[in-house]
Image: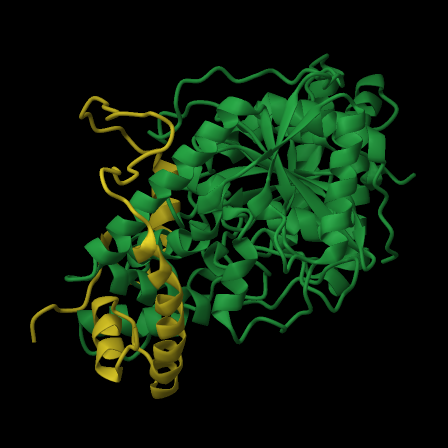
Length: 482
Length: 97
């Protein structure tokens, strides 16, 4: 086994015993990027020099007797997370040469823990999409089938983990952007509870649902990363003072737990192979001693229409800051202030970003606010209340992460509405701020299928417990050569 | 809901986005399709339902109204991103002709 193929847990054990160094581990990951990334295109910036310097420092810290689960562990971060001195582009032309003057809180925390940032990964521009095709720098390819998308918007992060370019990755999830690519690439992806990890230093998309989280090779590794990045941050007022669980090897015992299966998530039209893989997974979980209960979440179908009103609304406001004056691309040959704004934004933003700004501007404009935005926020309350009520009856809710396997590159890019429908099973947990994890459950048409587990707010521990037990039973194996 | 060309132009102006003729046509059609789709929200009974403002139970979060100094190096890095700088000030085109 090559060093870059290790999990965090395995690598940490070897580092602690002195069997390997962080420099060796980091070099192995950098070599893997050089070997395969011309085919995958997961990375937008590779910071080799900084990474090797940080790895040396981590080795010195270990030599002085320091320990830590992430000390010396190489990772990649979605290029919407600000990194001091290293380019942060949001995969947009408007930020093509932007260098952040400070680190996001989660990057700061990882630095302190001794994790090694080796690359910034591709995404849909400003995280607007479910395929990573909306990147201004070209799409990322799914390692299982290079003609297919990796999912999105954290597609570069998922593909990097799947191909062992790193030991873990950071992504952000607004309406499925960690879980969708995790499902399509066959890795673990955790969307924490809203507010569990700080948004400070994330380039904002939808402030009321954005949350950063890990993409990893195992459930246990997701637990490790969350224990480091979670917690209250005085720079993000939406991070409550909730106790952060230390990483613990959660008990694999799930006897007596109750799992809710919402019938609205197993509808006509989902890929039969996806349905079969998820049903098999549920049977396994039942065999492990959990009780299965059918539940109903009738407002599920309104998740997407609500999401595609609230999200563009917040985008139209959050992206107002890109004005060509303080940072980023600025249009040349303009006559006055208004032209700086409109030409910079017209030339700098890509198609999907413009579409969302337009949609948001429209639904918030005079005369339409009540009919669209306010109505959507009310229906959102219904979706949230319905999920909360269900989670009073069951410990977790299990669903397929995506209704289908990864689609072909180009298949949906001309029809935005078709692309939006990809979010059908992931949007509700985002709107309700609930934690949700996607775990590889099996294959359909030789492509990975993800199982989604949704839990109560701040109860990620339950997701890890069930996920861990399930993962150990099915032993999902990567089945591609790259 | 079919958006007319003049609606599209109006929204683009509000959003300060300069669009090409082809973009105006394309976005007009695509946005109309999305608006048709979200129309289904009108069928939901929301009588006595409060609009969601937050999801984790937070109320107002206050802090002292005090200026914090920004690290000099970070401040300089931020100013380096500015397209046009004059004597440490960000230069902006005239607002009035």
